[in-house]
Length: 281
Ligand code: AMP
Image 1 (cartoon, rainbow, N blue to C red):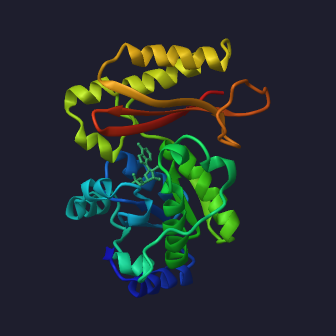
Image 2: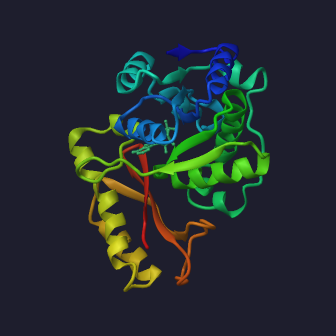
C-alpha cells in the first residue's frame, strides 16, 4: 500500500502495533534496485511489516545540481516493492510532511565518525542525513530501522544519532548486495554504460586486494598498492582510499590487534561518484 500523509501512516502503524506487529523502517531515496530489495528482505527477517520511505532529502545534498539530477521513478519503485512483498507500506511524504516550513539541516555532534571520508568530501551531508532520519523515526516510530553496510559511515552515524536523540529504535546493518563482477548495487550505476560497469568493478577488486594484503603488509603499503592499481586505469579516478577501525572511522596509519578494520573507497567514473567498503579482519 502507498501512504503519503503522516496521519494516515500513523493510524496504520498504531493499528499494527495494537496487533503486536513488529514494524521495520527502511529509509530510501527511491531509484530502487536489487540492493534495496535485499535490504527490505533482510528487514522482513526481523519484522512483520516493513515501511519503505521514498524521500529525496533536500538537506543532504551539498550541490543543488545533484539534487535535481537524482533519478526519480515512483511508479517503477512502487511496483518493485509491492511485487517483492505485498505487505510493504510505501511511505512517500512531501517535503512539507517531513520538514514543515523549516527545510534546513540541524547541527549534530557525531564526533570522529563523520570527520573523514564522506564527512570530509561531502560537507554538511551528514547533518542533512541526521536531520531527515531523526524526523522519519519520529513520524514512523518503527521498532527497528535498517541500513546498508554499503554506506558504512552512515550506518555508524545512525547508531550514534539514536544514542544522541534517545529515540527508541534499534538500528540494524545489512550486507552489501553486489553485481556478479563485485560492483556494489547503487542508484548511481543507472548512469553508467555497460562498459563502465565493467571498469567500475576495479573498486571491489581494490577492496579485495586490501583484504588479501591486510595481515602481511602495513597500511601504507596497502594504500600505495591500491593507488598504483588506480593509476593503471584511465577511466576511474580515485578520490580516497582509507583503512579505518569501525569504532572510530578515523583513517589509520598502523594496525592495533584488538580492533576491527574496514577499507573505504570513493572513486569517480566521469562525473559519477561511487563509494564502497569492505571488512578487512
Ligand atoms: P539510498 O536510497 O541510496 O539512500 O539507499 C537506501 C538504503 O539502501 C541505505 O541504507 C543504503 O545503504 C542501502 N543500500 C544501497 N545500496 C545497497 C546495496 N548494494 N546493498 C545493500 N543495501 C544497499
